[in-house]
Amino acid sequence: MDVEYVSVWDAIQNVAKQIGWFLGYRWNGEQYVLTFMEPPRQKDTYDFDLNWVDDIYRETLDISDADIRNVVTVTYRDKNTGQRETVTVMDQDSIAEYRRRAMQIEEADTSLIDTYEKARKFAESCLWDLSQLSATDRINMPLIPEIDVFSTFIVTNPQISSTTDFYAVQSVRHSLRFGERARFRTEVIAT
Image: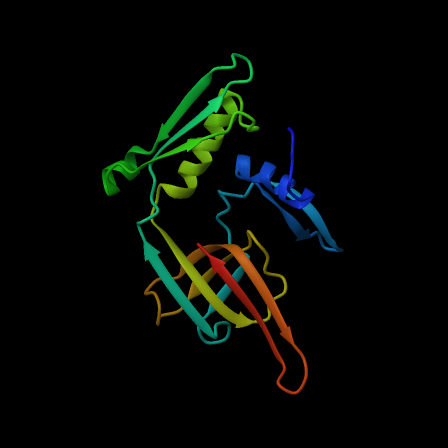
């Protein structure tokens, strides 16, 4: 892989993005370490139980079907044959519920997705992430330093939803302001 005119960080992030993985710093119990991992897409147990009485200062919930994609086509250059090949995967249940919503991903000739197996796994990961209705929740809460990307939580907030909802963290920011008007907050964006 030839890399020009980008920083080392951008180059290694590009590798992670090509296969839909995460590359970033995560706490391992003792220190932050650079971590390269596949997102845990099937985690179904929660790490935190948040409620509107004690844990939430402000919550904004956005539910939309605008980003649903239930047919994913990936085009790539096969490293063995040198030919452009295509892989298509679909979710019939999603198509029946939301109508057919297709997307196409065109991989560059230099992409690390260069075999049928890699292209299919990438397409299936995209389908897993995009084929069903999702909600994006933005929560501003007291400081909870243990919350990290890929943490999961349930939220009970009757002002926003009539059900207890399960979310996975996509983005987290901890804000620490010391001094006379001290303020310590955690803000998460989760789906």
